[in-house]
Length: 80
Image (cartoon, rainbow, N blue to C red; front, top):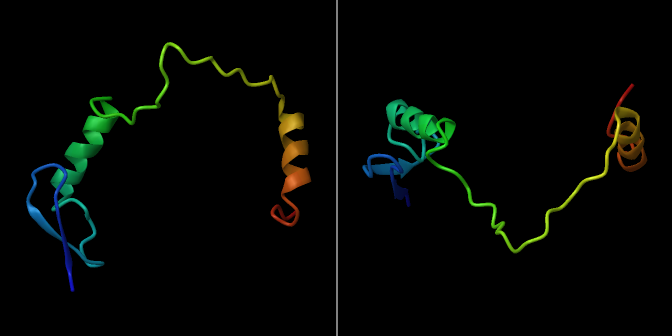
């Protein structure tokens, strides 16, 4: 059974199949329109922060600190 969705841009019916390279969009044009809206910050994902929440501060780390943390936790991940 094929799943059908609405194109997020034009609302046209779109088959959700592997051969549709633009899914969930109906075409490259609709895909690019959506990308442009994100790039122009017309669309965004709410972060959930509000004025009553505390600001989280991150520690100041230099590259050596970051590399040390990565090497501690990334056993076998990095190859020399």
